[in-house]
Amino acid sequence: MSTADLDRALARYAAAMEGLRADTVATLGDVMAPDIRFRDPFNAVTGLDRVQRIFSALFEDCDAVRFSVGRRFRDGEHAVLAWTMAFRLRRYAKGPDWTIEGLSEITLDPASGLVVAHVDHWDAAGQFYERLPLVGGVLRLLRRRLAH
Image 1 (cartoon, helix red, strand yellow):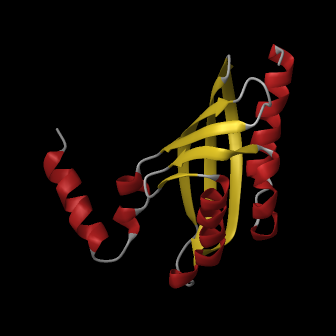
Image 2 (image 1 turned 90 degrees about the vertical axis):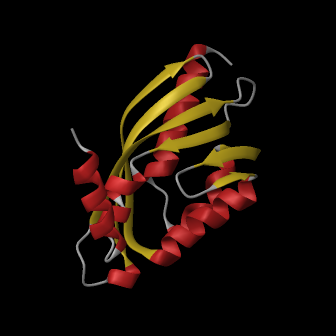
């Protein structure tokens, strides 16, 4: 693939993530390789079917899920997406909307343009666990005690 083709593949992937909804999880195969390696703070899996299960579970557990890709950078078949995910936990329906900001390392297959690896980096403690009842208080206390 040419540089322009890889740019288009990355743009397609970013658009697919931004358009991801419960009813579009099945279309991830349009932008992800069948043997994709996926990792985030909660999961480490190989295979499109397992990635689709992760996103399906996300939509079962959360309402109003929205991904927004800010910047993206590419160097050959390697890329980084800066993103924001907004959602509401169904378990805490009366609680506020949540926002998580992170980065994804993306590896594109240079022949097909499909994503063969997706690794998310975000602060699970500060952006998620600290907001949960009980465990959040303990983590906030630990953060204050360890801060310099």
